Amino acid sequence: MGSPGHTDFGYYTIFPHCPYCKAEARIKRWQRHYPTESYDCPVCGTQYVPAEAASTTTDGMELPNLRDLIGRVQFPSFAKTYLKQQGLSDLEAAKIVFATELREAEHQHTITEARVAEKDSDRPT
Image (tube, rainbow, N blue to C red):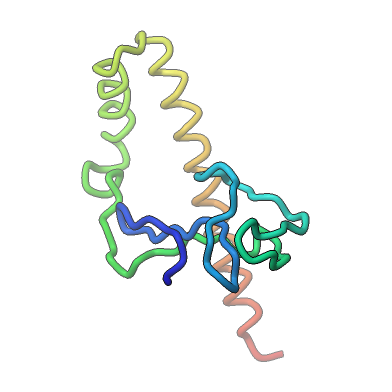
């Protein structure tokens, strides 16, 4: 049997499961962090750590980033319009877009710093 999982939007998610019999752990799916304590498989009794038996990886299908398709300058306006169409107020939509764009900028900064650090570590001393 295969591990319990889901493939969607370019990602392959494997839910916590017993590494021996592949039975899914009786833990809520789609959590950012799964328990790190030892867990007994309800099917075969094997002890394992749910966090170590779960993963999310790309499935090899690269999808373009919507920000890049629309343009990074136009994306916030698009996102705000989208959220308003979903029933949010102008203020709610603006707050969400602001917070999301801030997180995205921080993420891009972290990626850039990691690339610079990697280049620096590759330089001969």
